[in-house]
Each structure stands twice: as C-alpha cells, then as structure tokens.
Image (spheres, rainbow, N blue to C red):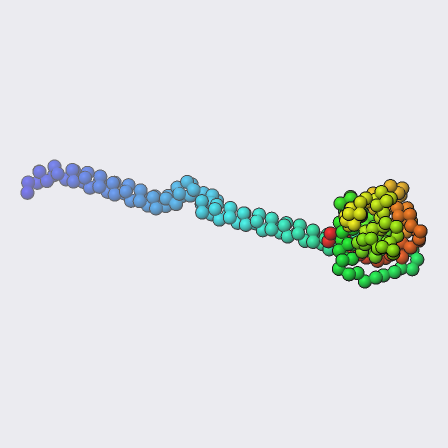
Length: 238
C-alpha cells in the first residue's frame, strides 16, 4: 500500500472513531440517567402521598361505612331510650301525691273491667290531663260501677244513672248512648273535674265528690291504691 495515501486516511479514521466513542458515551449516560432519573421524574409527577383513584374509592367506602355504623348506633340508642321511657311507670308521688286515706279495698278485674281502665286512661290523655286525673277517674269509676259499663238496672238503678260513672241523662250528662260510651263518659267526668278549683291538690275522695255529689262522699277514698296501681300499669300502654 502507498504509505503516503495511508497517512492521509489515518486522521479521518481517528476522527471517526472519536465521534463513535463520544456518541456511545452520550448514549450510555442517557441510558444510565434514564434508569436513575426515571422514578424520580415519576415521583415528581405523582407524589407518593396522592392516593390513586382506587385508593380514594376504598377510603370513601370506609368513610360511608363509618357513617352508616354511626347512624345505626344512633337509631338503636333512640329506640332503646323510647323503650325505656315506655317501660318506666309513673312515679307514686305523681299518682298519689297525698297518700291513700283510710282502709283500702281491692277487687280482681275481669277482661272487660281491664279494658275499661284502658279506655279511661286513653280518654284522659285525649283530654290533655295527667296521670293524677286518670287515678281520680278510675277511683271514681271503681266506686260507682266497679269499672263496669252499666246499663239500666231496673229497680236496682239509682234513678236513671248509667255507665262507668253512673251519670244521669236527666241531670244533663248526655244521652243514654253517650253516657254508656267509655270515652264520652270519661271526658264528661273530666270536664267536671277541671271546673273544681285546685283539684290536683285535693285527696281523691274530695275531688270525686265535688263532681259526683254522692250521698256517700267518703266512699271514693278506699279505691285510691288500686286506682293508682291500675293507672301505673296502663298509662304507657294506652
């Protein structure tokens, strides 16, 4: 080979080789840099503390579950409070604020008599009066009819007296049909009771007598204990 010609090519070969090495070096750095910088760039684009859509959905579901559990607990607590309130009987002080007077009497009640107690209590609530008014009404009915909705008793009848409270149509209490309706007769009695000044603070027998005007004014007292027990057991169930 011509030595002169070879000498001319040598710089070109060296220059080409240098270019290739430089290119390879840059490519290598780019690859290494990409491998190192890739996650860093990704981390910069999506920081670790930012939850993915799936994570956000799970967290939302957990939040909803927590709210649902809380609402369920609140509902159960409310039901429990209502149940306990319903099961709690009226206090004795409220039913018999002055205590029972004299010897007390008791009778066993039939189903009909028990139903009439419920009717009296329900009518008392409808009239907007409290447990004490119900005790006075039940005690009065115990004396007048033994809690039986009496019709006309013929020769044994006290004039034209009828119903739970032995009210008389001729005295303006209502028609026989009205007086023998437990709700009507109870509300009629309670209207008379409300016209008695300070009835809430009177002994049962005094309050009852002012409405009924009986020939035996002290007879109502004997039923106060039983009336209080009946109202206590019925008040929250009527």
